[in-house]
Length: 384
Image (cartoon, rainbow, N blue to C red; front, side):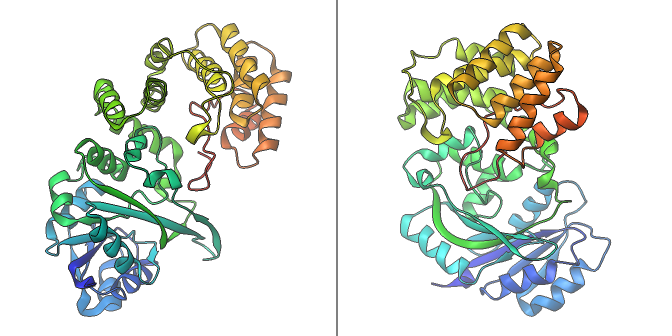
């Protein structure tokens, strides 16, 4: 397996504290390394060149714009058949390129993603493994990325260079460019691979843009609005998902797009539900989801708060979950039942101590945060 066929691209801005680690891990894999220095004000470029030697070249975009623009600059400079992404504050595990290249060529994939080991950026201590969900390897399941990012490493795939240049990166996006690339790849019928091998070390920092949930959600909504609901419905139907799974997907997309009225409209055409069924990827019954999502939509729209409270209470009666408790508390708070609302938020936080929405509601003593989408119940990503 010839690793010289793969170019590692590292987009970096003011990354002098971590760039050497990233470059050294990439250079050790073999093949050229391109550092896209996005107009750093520190010594990022010189440190990268010193760390990587002849393997490294440093280029700059024509101007400082967005991460999407920096990615496009990097892709345009690649001359090898394959490219692979690495963040400036992360590192490859040894053998990552050989492993992914073997997987991609054996299966004729256009792009492939792997699992991740998560480390604390300040202490460099291991936190936990972010595995690849088993279902992502099933035929057609890449379409389910429209419902949620199930992949632990959306930004760091190995990609055929010709394919990356054809699909391109949205140069207007300051973030969510990775999800945008994945979704447009699905629409274009790409052959995407998702493997269980672990090849990437992600270092988590509190100041990281990816930790800003509000910022991420706003740009995810922007990305999803690129795709017509009819187009998404066709993709699910063509892949073989039934009408119930397809409608739930559309409900979820509408909520991520911040279109609660559209989500309610889709729920009005839900096929008949069978009691206790429908847990699937979400780990929740269809009946629970209908009560939770309907109550949540009414809450978001501030329409019929009494009915919203009733639906969320019904969801809680079927199965106690942190998100139903949180949103039920918001409904109670808006109906003037502050004591009961606080009780709901406290129970939610007891169930899930890392639950930000419930904690912020308690701290504000007011229902300021609604959880629009059910929380993740897979180990591949955080609870949000």
